[in-house]
Structures are given as structure tokens and as C-alpha cells.
Image 1: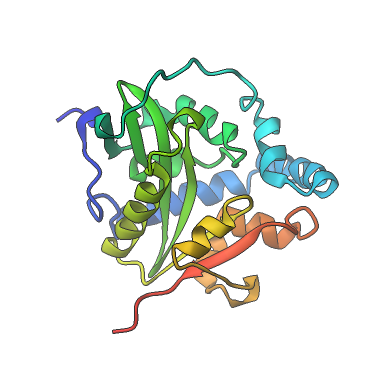
Image 2: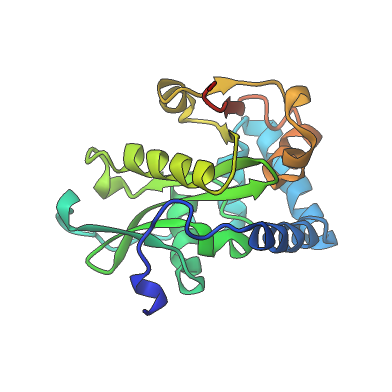
Length: 227
């Protein structure tokens, strides 16, 4: 089956080995001198306008590029599939357009959920695994595809994916959409209460290192249901 035809089935991708390999690749990129310099630049911009996600999107330089109209988007014509390496350029544009940081995609892209409508990506989101916990990231819907319930479906599927892959608690960071996540059962959680394995997450590292630039970022968690 071609990669482009792999449907999104929760729990079908992340194995302990894939999670470890992705983490190693992310840390190597995160700790490189070039990336550390970029984060310092983004932090300086974020401290000035209190919107580090928008500053990071602008720094990448793709967020302002106009995208062709998707035409009329029908929910029943949308396909939910796994991401692949060939999606990366489009995902960068889509995520940056949503004023989210389009960084560190490559190590995790095969675990992404991609929503496609007539060969155009109109939504996405990802899961990063950290031992017995997970982080949801980059949940975004194309402006022309909003109002169809895609965001709710992406959030639901990513939560199922994380749980089916072994995560007990699911964490995330949100700037503009934190009320959306509150409605879905997420609660705010101070950084000093995050478990150690999840602190390797690149967003955690940025928010913890640059609190002034991240003062409006909400750190959130949805804990495992008590059994």
C-alpha cells in the first residue's frame, strides 16, 4: 500500500523504538547551535509582542505566503491518513498560517494525522511520545475548512492515538486555542508539575527557558481516566 493511502488508525504507528528514534533525532536538532540561536531570536521577538508562535512562524518565513483556494470543502470528502515525508513542505505552510511553530516536524511526521480533501491538505495534528505520556502538537485546520468539525475530530483521534500507543497522560501547549482544549477536558498544569520525560519536549524547553516570551502560553494536561 502506498504511503499516501495509509489510513489513520489510532495506535498503529508509535512503537517504543519509533518513539525513541524520534526523540533522539529531535534532541539532536533542538540542541544544535543553529536551532538554539533561532530560539533565542524567536524569544526576543516573542517577548516584545507576547506571541512567540506568530514570531516563530514569521521567522520560518513561510506563514505569509498565500495559498491557493481549496474551493468548497465537504466533510464527507475528507480523508484522514498518516503523514509522510512528502507532506513536510505543505505542513510547514499550514502550521505557520495557523500561527503555530512549524518546527521539528521531520522526526514525527510519520505519526501525524493529515486531513486531505481532493489531494489538498486541509488539517493536521501530531503526537509525540515520551515514555508513558504524550504531547499533542500542531493541531491546525485550513481557514477554508473551518466550521466542519475537523478540529474536534483531529483532537479526538490524536487523543485516541496517544492512549492506544501507551500514553497515560496527554500534554499540550496552547496560545490562542486554550479554551477549545478546556472544553475537551484538558486542565492547566504548571511546568514544575510536568513529569521529567515530557520535559524533553522542544516546546517545554522553549517555554521553560524563555518565560517572558511565553507568558501567554497555556501548559495543559488531560490525565488518564481513573479506573
